[in-house]
Figure 1 (cartoon, rainbow, N blue to C red):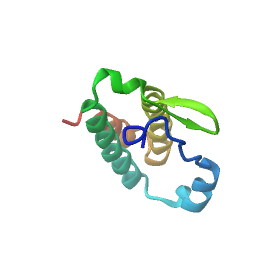
Figure 2: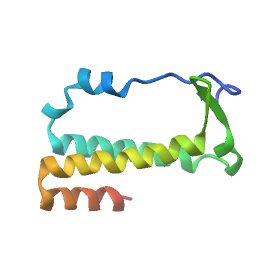
Figure 3: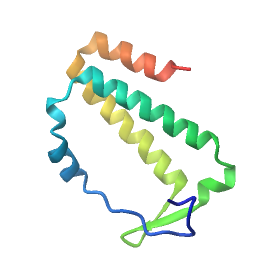
Length: 106
């Protein structure tokens, strides 16, 4: 959206509502790990295609500025939390392998 419009208003997402609606605690941790991995690679491909100046493009959520750089940093930060949650669901050995594979996938 930020790339398609000049300083757009960004959607406000209620993460609590998404969690409640998604019933995430009942999902298969291995499947979630794969989804996180796939989403991370899609995001990386999008970010790799951007020019350096594109990271400064901005939109506004509830009147607060959000740049592409800020959104990318937030996505990386949240992904780490999700991987930790998956690690708890899979157990240390399997999760370590999944996190390693996600971080080192070509």
